[in-house]
Image 1 (spheres, rainbow, N blue to C red):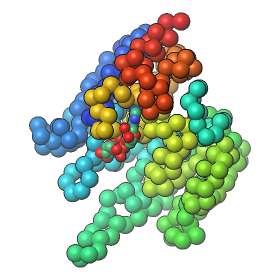
Image 2 (image 1 turned 60 degrees about the vertical axis):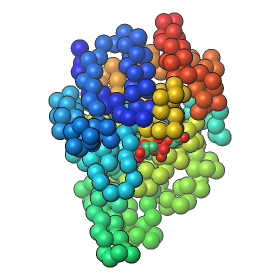
Image 3 (image 1 turned 180 degrees about the vertical axis):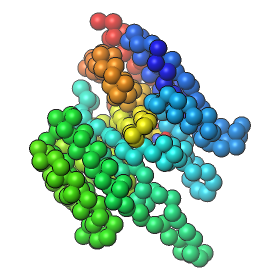
Image 4 (image 1 turned 90 degrees about the vertical axis):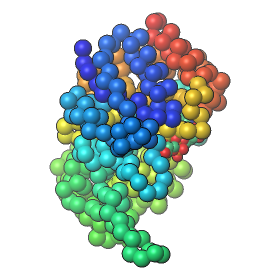
Length: 332
Ligand code: NAI
């Protein structure tokens, strides 16, 4: 039986984690979940939000499923999410955005993938207080990190039968940093003659995405633009409750939804487990359990077709009712 680390998170994290574990079990796939807690509650007991035991578990099991963890605003500890990505060198953030059955959105036929660089840019954590009224954040772009994310995007395109990779920058203004990202993309793109290339500025991308998102296939972006654009893309397919994601490195992979811990609906049996469930399906494909991933996705789609939806999608099913409906649909 395969052992997988599960960070069950806080806020709605434990509710949606339980839902996903129940659904995977009902699909017939036995997984030995190594459940690891992290986040604000852990600070009280262990002094840090991401204890070494969590990292050790992922290093041992290689793969993790992660529910959201609250990051308090202001000074203090580093975000668990940022630390995980840095410590495990999970350099690629992958967010496939595809319309789901019977989830009404502005556009049909959205099927794009956001590939976000995950380790540097303004998220490198290099900040300094210059004086009482001035703070600096340094934007770091390196050729090494850009090369590997661009290769990841092109390799993903080849493997998944995608036609085009579009690089997103603001190279007209940040000529050195975004300029390096763009130049490196151009170099890497020469290795993939079978894939079409496109270049776009991030402001124009945002306008194009809300006018006609169907024109895009694979997008590759530096960290900050990628963070913002992937939430925009989540909105295109029905919101945060359905948007899946993954953080992938050479040695480890952590699969997690785009959304946060949703403290406003915590403990109310209202949370939509779809985003975590779709992230789990990608995780199952990553460990070559495609049959179970397809089976679970089919049951999820059937449930949505049957108009059983949680409140964020305009339905009135509770988390438990939605979970049970998927489990029922796994049987036939
Ligand atoms: P959020 O994503 O938690 O919530 C935004 C809105 O979407 C809320 O109204 C919430 O109820 C709704 N929502 C989110 N997920 C949902 C779901 N599965 N089902 C139904 N409704 C859902 O964003 P917010 O409020 O900005 O962040 C809350 C906390 O989560 C913060 O501490 C933030 O730092 C953290 N966070 C953690 C992430 C992670 O662990 N990967 C990612 C994003 C935020």
